[in-house]
Length: 142
Image: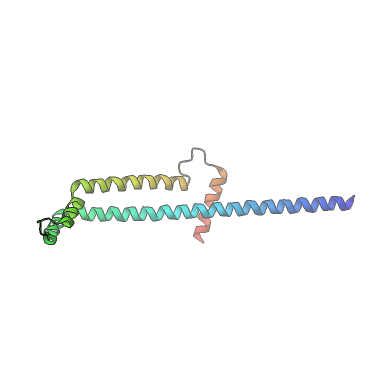
């Protein structure tokens, strides 16, 4: 009878240890995924901001871009320069507005994803998610 209790106790202990290991492994996987998501979002925001800077530089000196188009002008036998026509359409106001709109939409989506990744919009923050987020922040400091 005593041996039976000891075996049952050992089995229960091993089961508790394996459950704890499973929980810890799952928590680590979740933490890694969240950290990857945060990194991806950060890189996408940096890229979007770089593209905004590029667009800003383009908009700052449109006359110079038009002058460049004149210097590049190289018509074919029919008097057309398709490359120059494409260049003019790219530097045109509607195209710059379209780019600004697309970048703004991208940034809006990325900010939403970032807020979600950091749990900033949770009405009632999940205690486990909050603890996990704190753990990830602590790990990233190391």
